[in-house]
Image 1: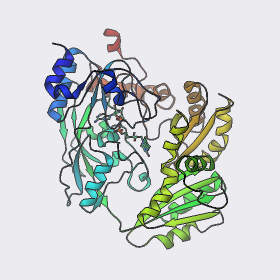
Image 2: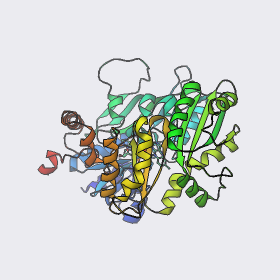
Image 3: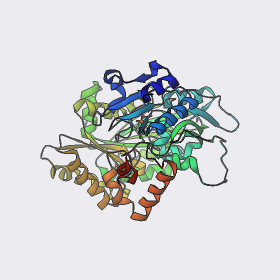
Image 4: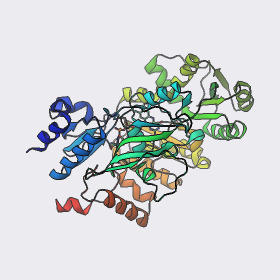
Length: 458
Ligand SMILES: Cc1cc2nc3c(=O)[nH]c(=O)nc-3n(C[C@H](O)[C@H](O)[C@H](O)COP(=O)(O)OP(=O)(O)OC[C@H]3O[C@@H](n4cnc5c(N)ncnc54)[C@H](O)[C@@H]3O)c2cc1C
C-alpha cells in the first residue's frame, strides 16, 4: 500500500493533500524566504491519529516536518526535501481552566489568541504574548520556546510549560500532563521538548501555567535621542517599576517611518527622534503616575501615554506592525539575536557599516525586546543571505551575544550553532536527538548541522 493511502485511511482522504496547489499554504513560510515540496500534507485531528500517522511514516521510512501556525521565522516548519508535512492545527481544543491550580491544557494546534481569550474568560492571563497571536499555535510556541513581549515579567514559553503530551517518532505517546509546579521525578522531559523545534517529538497537548490579570494597565511611547540613552532609560524603568513593568520594546526612526508609510498611521510626535521605546505597566493600582515619574528624565524628548484598550493598541501598532511593514518592502534576511546590554549601543551604531560590507545598498532595520538585549535585525536589499548572516552574526558573536534569542535555529542558523555551542555541548544534543529519534525521521536538517549517520545509511 502506498503511504498516502495509509495516511488517508487514518485521517480521511480530505485531510491528505498531495496536490501542490492545495499544499501551497503549508509549504512556504511566513517570510516567503523558505519554501519546499512536501510528499503530502496530513491534517490529523487527534493524538491517536498523530500516533497512527507517525507509525505509518516510520514503517515507510518517511521523514516528517511538524507544523503549527507556520509563523516561525527560521524555516524549520516547512518542507525541504519531499517530507510528509504534519499540521497540528486541527488539535485546537482548550480544556477547562483549573482555576485553583492556575493551569490549563491546550491542544497543540490552539492559537495563542484563543488560549488568551480562554484564560481571560476564567479571570486569568497567559504569560506570553506576541504579534503573531492569531496564527501562532501553542505547540509551535513550545517547540520554539517562543519569547515575545512579556518575557521580562513572566519568562518565555519554558517558564509556562507544566507538562506535555507528545507523539514520538515511532508512534508511542509520551504523556506528562500533571501540571504540578513542583515535581522532581526524573529528567525534565517537557523542558527538553521545549525549544526542540520538532526534532524530537510531535507535541499534541500542552499544560501551561496561567498568571493573575492585573486590573490596571498603561502603555507609553517614549522618544529618546539615541540607543545609549534608551539602554540607560531601560535600566532606570526596570529599577523603578520592577513589579509592574510588563513590556519594554525598542524601535528606531527608520522602522517607525516604515510603519507610518505602510499603515497610514501618523507620526506620533511633532519632532522626529532617533529611537523610541514602547513601555507597558500592569498592576493592582493605576500605574500611570509611577510610569510618568520613572520616565520623567531629560532623556525623554516626547511621550504619549494611554490606558484604555483602543488608545493602547494605537501606541502598540507602531511596534507591532513593523514585521508586516518590512515584508511589504521585500523579503528581508531576519536575524533574531541577543547582545549584552552594555555592548548593545555599539552594536546598533555599527550595524550600517557591518551590512555595507556585504552590499552597498543593504539596509538594516532593527527593533526588539530591549530588556533582554534581544534585537530583530532585518536586512533588506543586501545581497546573498548567507553573506548577510555571516556579517551580522559574526558581529553578534564578537560582542558576546547569542545567534538565536527566541526564534530558534531552524535551517536558517544551523551553520552558526557551533560558534556559540562547544563540541561536547553539540555532541550531547546530538545524543539526545538519537535517543528520541534513532531513525532520523523528525525534521531532518533542522537545528543540527552535522549530517546524521543515518542519512548516509538510507
Ligand atoms: C509577526 C510575527 C511576530 C512574531 N513575534 C515573535 C515574538 O515576539 N517572539 C517570538 O519568540 N517569536 C515571534 N514570532 C515567531 C513565531 O511566531 C514563533 O516562532 C511561534 O512560536 C511559531 O509558532 P507556530 O505555531 O507558527 O509554529 P510553526 O512556524 O508552524 O513551527 C515552528 C517550529 O516548531 C515546530 N513545530 C510546530 N508545531 C509543532 C508541534 N506541535 N510539535 C513539534 N514541533 C512543532 C516546527 O517544526 C518548526 O520547527 C513572530 C512571528 C511573526 C510572523
